[in-house]
Image 1 (cartoon, helix red, strand yellow):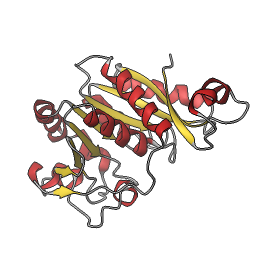
Image 2: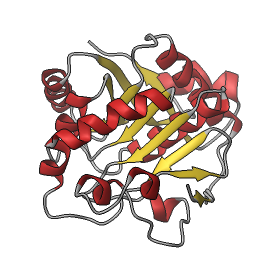
Image 3: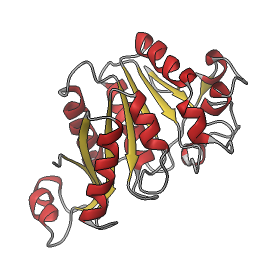
Length: 237
């Protein structure tokens, strides 16, 4: 098994680290049966890759052997964001039979955190995830890892996330503050629940903690005068 050294271009603030720990705790309290979790978003740029990877990192930091799978075969940003210099084989190579699991599974420079990169961008991503080979892979991974976090394409744009969620134990939706209407968010949640009824909730992302908003009033006094946006776990019906 080879190793990938992951270098973040921007380090998390203390506030952001605490929020991801809170998200980790919320996930852990949903039950030990929720080992394989699909993470999607309504729209591109909602921050699902950051949220899913940082959730995986937080779980690993807490002693859980965790795997992050980059399953966004449409427009992955993971390798660029974490400065992976080479173009390693990944999930697309495995699902298409061009690589073994050993060839696409990588250790990272973070203890207990493993990664399966995206690999090449195929012409038929939905069909690849619909194959039984994907379901069999997840069952094997559940025997080895405490958690498997799968970063999927935005469900508001393509159907891949629903196909993937159907094979998972649970799903999470990332929504950027003010990025889309409440009605659209509800419609995406309905699609997720139709694929897999075990929907854990919404992560409200890019929430400004400064200003006159509800979140600024609620959290600003505790975390200080930080102009950065942050992630906030939020359950919806």
